View 1 (tube, rainbow, N blue to C red):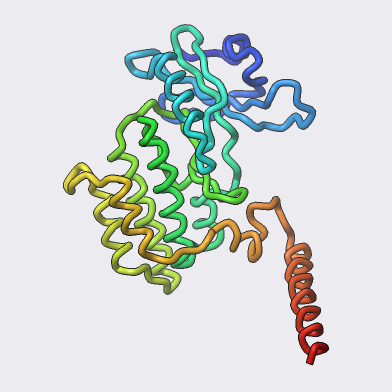
View 2 (view 1 turned 90 degrees about the vertical axis):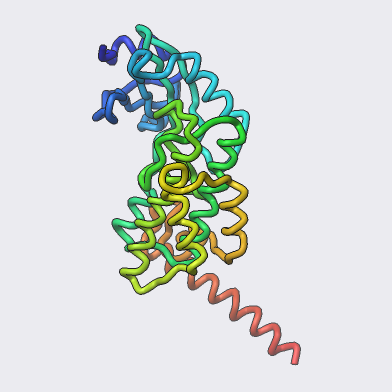
Length: 271
């Protein structure tokens, strides 16, 4: 049975101030919300309402999941903020997904460099490994659930399932990186064969191929150099520090150049 905005507003209490309903995600109901007593007023949270058991998780399962994720404290994970139950249906509050995601980057900027792709794969693998150590699987990993805002790659949509399918997370990551690789090849970039082979194994882990562990995956990734996606994007595209325009980015580059010239002047003056 669908939950109305009025019913959920009463149930969520101080966890979130509901604004409006959103298009659903499969069997999930989604509602835009903001933090209580905030002056900003904009949407900053999403309330996810699950179907009643057995089609959806119990409120207790969602509470255990949220507690485990929050206890891990990993910076690459956008942990759920609150959870509860209304009319037998569990609900959970997630932070709002930023606009700049991996999917958005592929659609608007045509992909990643080789080192950025390896860095992305490693960052997501480390975040998944942290979840798995807490007995939690992501369960809803897509290109559109990984944000590139801030100083690190961040996994979102942790309230969409109560999954414990670790192999499913690795398969999802493998399939996602294969799509990134296809964009990279289209742009004339080629990943090391060792990474390509690892991704192929990940995409079939636990189905037509053997299960893989986080240690196996990270052991391969740590043999290859990578670069931070967010730091490069901040310099080149202005991503991760708000919507920097071309003038602001030009100002940053000119400031860096001026600093270099000052250093060079001191060096020449010393001679």
